[in-house]
Image (tube, rainbow, N blue to C red):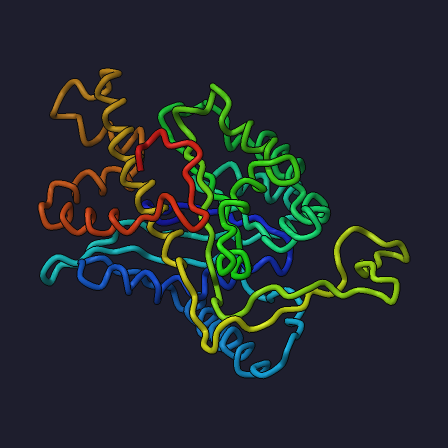
Length: 360
């Protein structure tokens, strides 16, 4: 049996999008913004080993290629586990309590239509859709659709039941996470990234689906870019003698994905930015969901008798929300949570909340 305070987060994105890099930089970034609060983020043993190894690899990119005008990054997908487990806890004086266990499931966009993925989609409270910003933006988005497969993702989400209304009071969240966006961040073009994500060459059909009337009061949707390295930015695609982009060959036939992607340095040191935001959004989502569900349950008359209140809450919504409600009785917890909530980035630098039923 899994942990009773577990939140499942499914990360969807093509191979080499940068999903694992986000996980690797997440803990240190979160602890920096939570430094003066009682909140902590820890990884289990296997996840910690992965993080340490991945951080070394990320820093090696900087050290190995420094001084080169342009270079390519290892094209082999990260080999790792299927799930990465983190625990958000809160310490008040000497007492440390678990707030939530966050289990990130990493699947490739190429596998999004499988039965195994459907089961993960159904049980997940949060979907993180990794966006390769280079393929989204370059050549006027010519390679975005074949790389991101937005229609396949939309159909998989609908078919798997992520948006099913069998538990109408249970909120969900979808984050579009632009990665490899250092070039556009430096050039002040992050608003263009947001517009491209919402456009026909991005994820318009999926966003329109998530914003349909049936889901407007239940599904939070946001664009939350991350700079996983900070120092490395897109330079160019590899081109042949004819000047055209060289495309990958699949069984002897060219598909639309560029075969070579070159990068360059825009800073001297490894300098990730905004890697704490996924945890802040998930924590904010969990706390706001707990408050909303409790309010709706009270309105629906599901907590008539105080004597059975706690048992009813556990039966209907599980230990996660109950634990949040109990923690929110602490003045210190509420104060520290308010500090963290104030670090949640909602606008600027490509951040935009597209649908906000929880008022994050």
